[in-house]
Image (cartoon, rainbow, N blue to C red; front, side):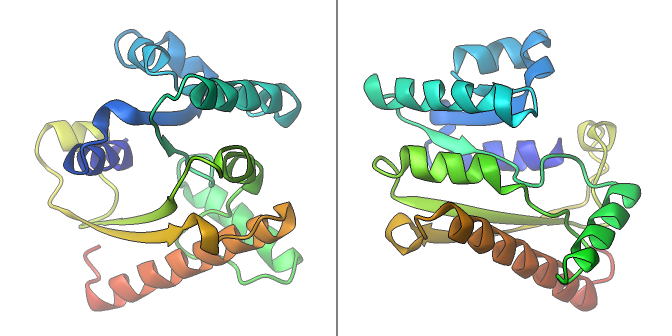
Length: 196
């Protein structure tokens, strides 16, 4: 939740708030207010099943392009909230594949990102990689609403689309490398300031 609020602030700062389109869990569209608003904004609601989601994603992209709908597409390739047991599973999976086990991030799931990059490449100028670190750890929604969150650091990197790979496997590897870099950045921030 805190990430979403910071990304909304970034969108507002860049005058893109009305153009934000999110990949979100299907059940969110039924949440009064927030979910209904996301439906009207043409967000993409996923069932987390590639066989079911693929055609929905392609149809959404086709609509954006056909109707010339401006968009800033936001997706979380790691797919879910960071929890200790999920981080442990991610580290075990990475180790089993001979990859560097992450310490601060989950492993990205590249299908949605690859679909977005290939399906929208003709209309996008860049991909923005955002890494967020919170002072005192990630706050809960209640801590945010009560003003108990003490601050955050947001690192935003811009990658021009022409510099990104076109092959699905290369896109997946490019994304994996970004998450290795995110993990390293968070490690460095923690060394500089253990309160993060």
